[in-house]
Length: 407
Image 1 (cartoon, rainbow, N blue to C red):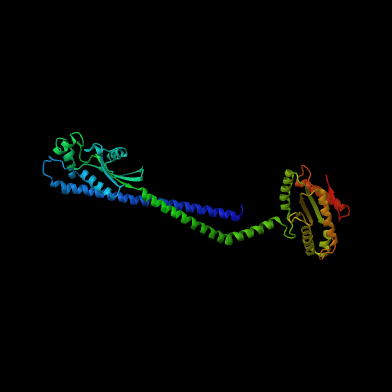
Image 2 (cartoon, rainbow, N blue to C red):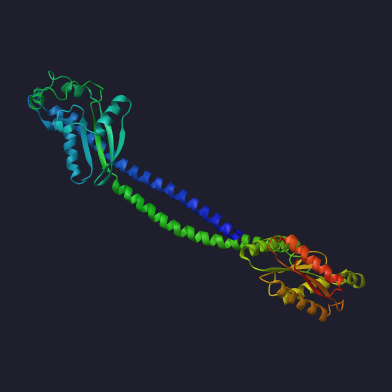
């Protein structure tokens, strides 16, 4: 993977992680905020109901004649609270208030389902003063806040025992229900139910708007940062990397590829040709009497001759990456999809080109060529040895010629 691709990948991963974390934190914050608002609404409902109960106990009940022969439901705190909150529910249809008990005076107020669990939880933990429960309804999620009903002395005066209860209470509800209460016991619960669906929907809608806006912002930031980093970081790195790759694979003097490249690329080419059945030829070539050039004209001229020699080969070749400098004045050419006859013909063209055109500062020079074609079972080493033997035969036969070997 290229440096630019890795940068884009890391940058994208970073943006995704930041986006996911920020979105998750905001979602949790919005949901918590929505539930806090719903909770405030429930607390307001509860405080209103408690205020009605207190008003009933302190201001209404003292006005009743003594004896309690006639039951006035409006003077019962639970009835007054339920009735008052029911009137308010007409304006807020989904808001509910209820007082439930395990053994209520009015059967309609009997606890059921999770309400019983809440009352039992208050009984198990006397210090607990509140319980929150969430349910799903056709209208959406509902938040229920329950508080325990623990009788006071005033409550026990009516509900302690049937014998001491007001006659009107016994006459209306009988002598079995809603008696036996003791001060401080948990006999029921006050429950406020508030709709949470709309608040949660608003929070989620706000979150989705944030997601959309964030995606646009993050995409813009990604593009801007990508361009900035590409220009200030990646481009210099790629330039240096390209230079390093060039130095690692090319011969600095001649521009031909170096021996390391010859070995790596030669093995890969042989493997590919062996798999596909394609032909491959190797040409070993070097300059005749090159030592005399250095001795007569100096090493600077010798270096210039090597560069010009490589340049002529590259100019005459269709492929710019087929020439390798494998020694001082020794070169090799890998010619894929080229059989032995075609390779010999090409080497002959090069030989005539070198012979016909003088080299700058050194005059006319010649070169010798050894050609070998890939055989079944060949490795780069065996192929090179065969081409070298052909080159030595060309040298021994008088130089300035092309020799090929098939075995």
